[in-house]
Length: 622
Image (cartoon, rainbow, N blue to C red; front, side):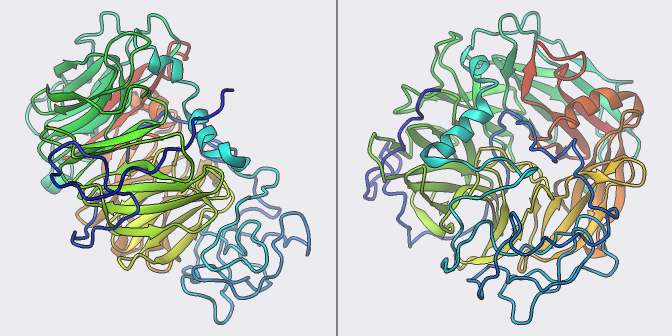
């Protein structure tokens, strides 16, 4: 394997006298004291689905002796992986729990005087899915300072994989996530054969709206609106087609060399936008008026660079504007991402970043990596109502990470959280409130942190040894299965054995303390993932079984996770639905205006008759 590129250098400092002109970023570490604070949403550029770690979705963990719900056998003192006894920990760290058995996956009773954020005792009768109280953080040596993480995590057999090693850990993680599709993404000469208008409308077509009030479907009985077939691959075996969005009228999905728009009411294809080359990255967000953004290769050549940024109108089915990004001569899809926040679109690639007004014009600000070491550069952006960034300073082997809220016109930070030392990766889950997922001693997510407006850590939720499935990959906005509101962080547990088949739960954690408060079960033969918030309720998706369609439910936080059925997808679509929903769910489902959409990014010529057959499927009420 070739050596990874050197870390990007520090961009020039200094305020831009005219933010409308193309200027270098005025300093990634500075705060803009005059700018206000606010809050974006979650989500990020869809990336290639990665295989889940051992024990994740699709592989139920081995139950301890005695079955689920029984106390686990305590490790003997000094045994492999057993954390040593520790003195009182620093801010945000749980103290060592006392001896004594609790039920499987239960948090233990906190010792007297436990530090701030120590998880509380779960509700009476809580079942599988509640976390055991973590002891000392992985491998933490004695005397480690407050807020510190270990720089290495010695996992035992069955753990979440080897931690990122040495100075190349971060780049190796990016390469590993992209290796299956690099050729397909760069080889933009793969284009569809006779693919125009090749969409399948499902069932009897009904025009007009199928919404209920406030986005609730008019009926709980769902029907298939459409299926978007995957394009035919003429040369390569795999390809990546990032990007999926929904408006009140349209579901839009990227395909090879363009974007297809489906009429969400009739299920018929409404339009197709042809682009200059392959889509290299796409915003996870679309605006209220239906704008989305993509980075496109400059030509259809297999050697074309990913240097064109375009904004498209999803309701009208047209490209609004396109511009060549500065300093992007070597840009490829590897490590590329983009996001929309506060009427600004920002893109990041290995070696640089740039931001534009969504309405177009010259770049607002830009950065350019250098061959130097020890500088700072954006790792990626997160959008929504605000524009946020993860900034890395120092080397890849020993990074200093910061999470920032940006002034979108200048690129300067007006809010900043210093991620604890020893964290290898940081992903932004939410900005209002601020929630991040971090990899401590590993490129994989190990903890979820909540952060206050005072820029200080509030609570830390340990993800344990494959106990939860946040759905994070390498991108800053890549945690597809975590949802946040003002009170809770919602996480799906890993699959485990139920009474007759595998199942799981959604666990609601208190956003201020990190303690589990309640759970909502998937039910037998089902698994459940959170999708988003609507009207104060959590919208969740119960995946299909082999013979029954999936279900959309509303989970009521005020009623301890009580569920209301919103839509039952048809059983005759279960196989095709399962072939998208049952892979890894690295691409979050979309629920919009009483309709539900699932989609995927990776397509393969070698796939079976099931996986890869469709790019997306839409469902609505009968």
